[in-house]
Amino acid sequence: MVAREESEFHRTMVQKKSDREVVVTRTFDAPARIVFEAWSRPELFKKWWAPRSMGMTLRSCDMDVRAGGKYRLVFGDDPENAMAFFGKYLDVVPDKRIVWTNEESGDAGSVTTVTFEERDGKTLLVLSELYPTKEALDEAGTGAQEMLGETFGQLDELLAGLSPH
Amino acid sequence: MVQCLPSDFNASFAALADSTRRGVLDQLARGDASISDLADKFEMTLTGMKKHVSVLESAGLVTTEKVGRVRTCRFGPCRLEEEMAWIARYRQVWDQRFTALDGVIDELQRQEKGRGRKRRK
Image 1 (cartoon, rainbow over the protein chains, first blue to last red):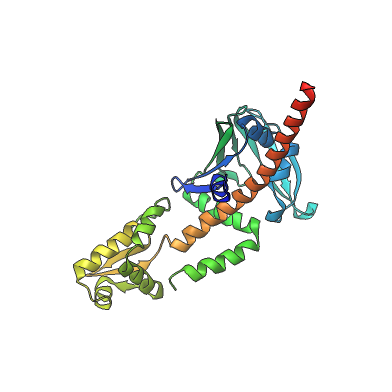
Image 2: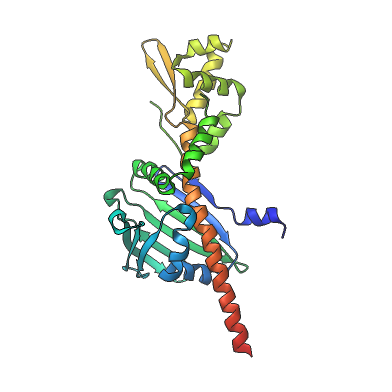
């Protein structure tokens, strides 16, 4: 496979389905059970959910991946500045789908559904985040910016250059 | 009152495909203007300018408000750069995660192949 096709294959696509729902798609070069495993075993999940490039440390990761089970992720370099993300799994179908709530923002929390569709040994991952209101979704984009810190300072400069001022 | 439809990203691009409409946006980014101001500025009929403004309005790039006999146009509320920034931010988070996930998946597949070989021996 040539490099261009390779990068097209691994492309992360983001689409707003409505003012409350955003959908992310990505194909992985592995069967669905492998992708599901990396998503449902805490010791593996920990390795990729907060990559070093994001500039955040995942301090702890407790996950009980089954319907009704809970999870709790704690980020931060030291206990004083720790930030927790938590919720529960609404639905878990091994190798096929995981649905969970995001309860750290209270009523503004989204429900995330991730599905794994296997085709010819590769897996199409579709992740949907459904927010209770448009405002909650807009806010989530801002939260992501804070999470990524400096990187976005550069992006904002770039976008400011593109805007018609 | 116009509705803000961030999902309609294609409409934003279609609205920007026209040079007059890009000019109108550029003008409105400097300050509000009435349809007739814009028609004068771009040497166009009032009807022609109304059409351009209505395309920008349906794309959520411009809002208009009629006060008395004057329709005032203003930049926004769905400013394109905000929309782009939102998507770009969101995408960057997931893209970084998924690049790391590729690594974990490769490792799992290697382990599995290793075990498979041992079992066959």
